[in-house]
Image 1 (tube, one colour):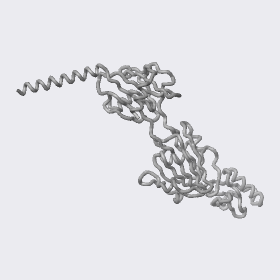
Image 2 (spheres, rainbow, N blue to C red):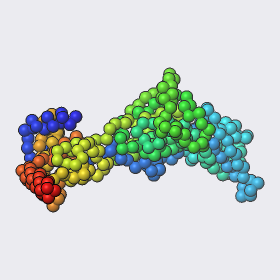
Image 3 (spheres, one colour):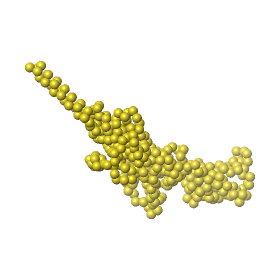
Image 4 (cartoon, rainbow, N blue to C red):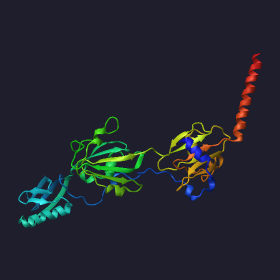
Length: 355
C-alpha cells in the first residue's frame, strides 16, 4: 500500500502550500459512522401501548373504602384481550393506558357494573424480548430487553455501544417467532468467553416470515435509530471495518500506519509525534500526499514544521488515506557528514593514544 501511494504521489501534478489550500483539499476531524447518543434519554417519547404478553393491573373503585377497591393483575393474551371477572374479555392490545381505561369503562357501562366506578389500567411488566447484538460493538451477546425498550438504540446501548471499527451499516435479521435467546426473562446478558458469539447463533435458518433490513448510520440520528423497533429473537449485526489511518514515511524514527482518533482533529504534528519524531533536528519539510475529492488525482501539500509549530493554519488537518512524507535536506546531510567525520577523528585519536 505504501509503495502504491508513494508511486501515486510521485506522479502528482497539483502542488500546494499548507497555508493556501483550496476548499476541496481541506479536511475536518474524522467522525465515526455512529456517534449518536445511546443513553436512555433518546428512547421513544410516544405513550407506550399494550401488547400481547404484557402484565397489567386493572383497578376498579366503587367507593372510597379499601373494600370498595378491586385490584386485578393479569396478562394480555395472544388475542390482545384481558379477562376480567364479570366483565369478561376486553381488547386492550394496541392501546395506551388511557385507551385501555376507556375500554374497561365502556364494558362497565355495558354490563351496568356501577356506572360511577373509577377505573385505572397500568402496565406492571412489559413482555421481554431476547435480542442478539454482534459485530462491531463493545460487548457482543444476547440481551433481554423489555418490549417497550426493544429498539435499536437500547440494544446498542445494552451492548456497550459501537466500537471505533464500526462501519456505516447495521443489519437487522428478524426470525419470526423463533427465540434465539433461550434465556429466562430478566436474566443477565450472556457473553461468550471469547468475546464473540457462537457461530451457530448466526447460522440458524430463519423461518418463512424472516425479514432482513439494513440501517445506515449517520451522526445525529439517535431519534431515527430509536424508532427502529426490534422483535423478540431479532439479530442486530453492526458492520465492522478497519479504522481509517494515515501513513507516515521518510525521516522519522518509527515510520508506519497510524489510526486516526475519533471525532478530533488529527494534524501533521500529531502524526509525526506518533511516529516518535523526526530523525534529525534540521529537518523542516513535510509533504502530504492527498487524494483530490471527486477524482482519481492526488495533490502534494508542502508543510514547514517550523511554521506548523507556530501557526495552526500551517499544521493542517489530515484526512484518512493521507501519506505524510518527512523529507530529507542538505542540512541533514551536512549533519550526518559532520557526525561521521567527528567519529573518525575520535577513533583516530584513540588509535594514536593507544600507540
